Length: 273
Image (tube, rainbow, N blue to C red; front, side, top):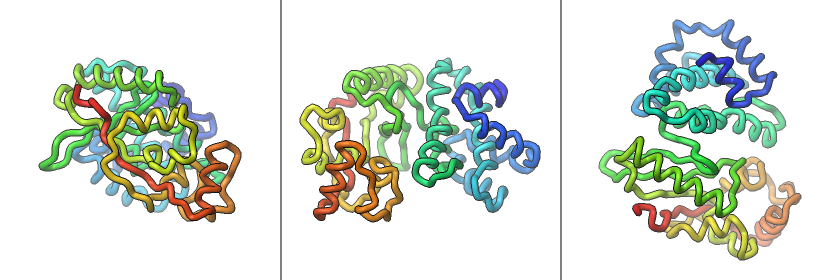
């Protein structure tokens, strides 16, 4: 796979591709290639990212980091093929790059790459997009394996779509990562916030998703919902928040009255079956 095939396959905008091509001309591959290779390994990705940041120096729009991570993704495609993981999963997973840049434009009024600290999970085969949802292979020293559930901003969140994604993910793990096939599926998100029960109708897709989980903990002070619900900075004043959807209007009124949305963490019911 060439970089151009990758760029086209994930739907990068022409303006992004032009910037990446210019970046490639000035980037010293001799200096960064070792970091790129280590980005593709889960055990070295975090260290490689920090070292690569130092190597690239100050980057206002992070196109050097974007180029390196996309080159890592290009190299990773060979490993996908060796494991017989379908190209659809590869491309769907790597579409996180243009999606994050689009989210950045909405939030900051400028399109640039601000999520390199997160996308090391995709380019090291820790996160896979399977249908509507993303699945992260999680294991820390001394703890059981778990599968982290993430909800992309462009997900079809209907119960049918979520159910189909979960079923496909369980089959995927059983075939490619059997050590994780019996692991708990865990989620930590504002979408599990118990406050949402006061703001949404009973037939809401969000509440349908919540009912799939046993809630294990609540953080009322988490402000992640500012980014994901309102596309705003965490410290944005309540009166400045948009109210162009029914949920945004209800949440803004709730916050103005002193309510807290926060976040919650939960375990998918029957996830070990």
